[in-house]
Image (cartoon, rainbow, N blue to C red; front, side, top):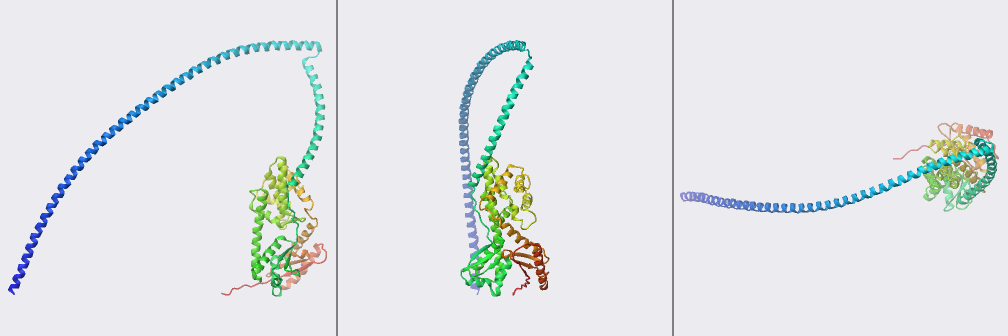
Length: 514
């Protein structure tokens, strides 16, 4: 055991001695490395200082050389500019010498002119003296003073001039009338020849083609509910007869008829025909017709070349596509009048665009005369004033039928163009006005009754279909209402045959299964 302890002590002592010796050697090596690094750093710094000094000297030399070079260039440029200045100075001196010479010449000419002017004045004085002597001699010979002779001559000349003037005025008036008549005929004929307008005759029916005759039964529906719903929603009478693969839509209002036609065509394509679907398609067709009206109005303004019209007036123009007067389409008529007005204005040297604008809007009141009280002229003037149209356009609208005096040539042109468009052969039919008036009156009578929602005159006025508000009119009241409407029609209207009054009251309850 003592040997083990002794060995352990010996190992510990040797380890300690080894540590001390190793640590000393490492420290000595580190000190030696630090000394070498410091000496190398001092050498690097000295070398850098030497290099910097050398570069500084080189830079100074380059700067001196550059400054000397710049100075030489500046000296050279200064010499060139001095030489240029000297040349300019010599030119100026030469110009001054030339100006002095010209001044001398002008002074000499002025002196010469002054001498001539003096001679002229002397000659004028001599001529004046000679004239006085001549007048005195003439007065002595004639026994009249100069004033009396002047008056006598003027009177003779005046009488001759008056006679010749009267003859010339008479000749010019007759020639002007002949020329005016001739020119007016030429302008009108030229305008009519250059304006090619289509005539669209109004019809009261539309035909819808069917894919097969089986579709007729689907359109009629169970117990006629489909056809009844379609007629109620559109106010148009559907005629389903033996005509193969066709259904006829009858109604005097072209807008309603167009809505019905579009809705029916959509239903045929869709294939699902029932009351709810019919209502949906009618609403879509009404929106399509509204879009069509707007597009027709814009197309009319583009065709005529008139811009800047209020959008509402443009929409009303499109609505006139479905309005006729004596069988003549109102929109086509307005376009034709606008084109004729533009042609006549161009011939007379007037504002062509303003003439076209007045011609296009002259019948704008016809777009609303079925909905509002008043003549189409009054309504047109109100619309033009409402949408701030030009005063010339407003006057043309209110004077195109001679109700108001025209205040401009453009208004006279529009009046002439309107007459040309309406009076040309085949433009209008005289029987249409009484027809549309009777249908309009029929609907107005029925709409005046309390509880009536809307009414439609169908079958060319032989039937009126009256839709009532179910909350205001009961089933018992319907009988009395139909009788009252019949009596009122008999009292207020004259018509051949008989008119069927069809009062319809519909109650509807809608719920949804969730």
